[in-house]
Image 1 (tube, one colour):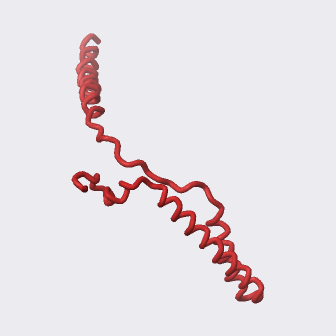
Image 2 (tube, one colour; image 1 turned 30 degrees about the vertical axis):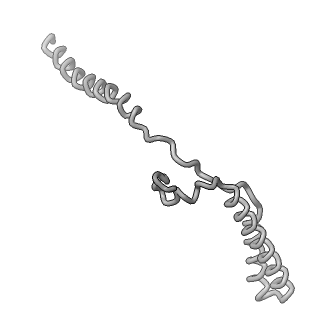
Image 3 (tube, rainbow, N blue to C red; image 1 turned 180 degrees about the vertical axis):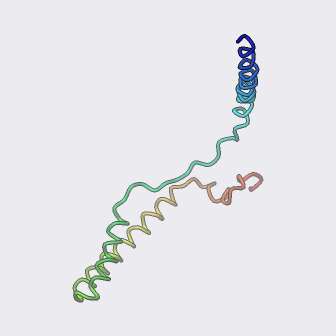
Length: 112
């Protein structure tokens, strides 16, 4: 029975070596993190897309129910589309001026 005890020990030794190898290379991967780039701009929450979709839906439903639904749907759709575009233009105008220079993911280096 003493012959069976040495067998598990060599099997656990390579497993311990496999655990130690990634741990030793772990800090090297942390130091290779690329520098922070441009912040991602996300628009704020808005109900405009929901009302825009409701306007389209009313317009489509109006083709079977009557002209009143078409008119209300088109007015709602056109108004929300106009407001949505105006809101997007305002958000774009508030971006930093150097945003367009670095556009395309090239970092903007060397552009003056």
